[in-house]
Image (cartoon, rainbow, N blue to C red):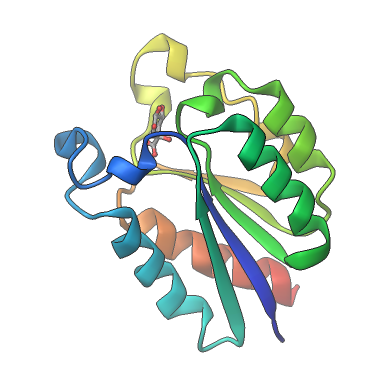
Length: 146
Ligand code: DQA
């Protein structure tokens, strides 16, 4: 099998490593991408990574993925809790979609308990820190092979 997997990251995730390491860990976003890539590359897939602090850019990247990518692994950051437009965009993508969170939003402040995207993805992985992206890599491969 082959194809591009979109590794998409939302607002403030460019600051991973510096931002609240007691919650999100010491790894940078590049560390997470490496860990993810190390699992999917031997299976024949390549990874396109994009981080943006702009909701519009994230939506446009999902639209492009409709023709450029076979799967999406997405941590929408705080837009998880507010963006219905991101959910609508994800619904237009027919391949596997995995929602990832480093922390467990359900165990945090009430405003983090809602995920607008949860109903539009294949599945969600939350609360496992850096391991989450590795789990997401295995989940996406399983979906692609199914
Ligand atoms: C996050 C959880 C969100 O609530 C938060 O706004 C983030 C990161 C996570 O990976 O745990 O930016 O998506």
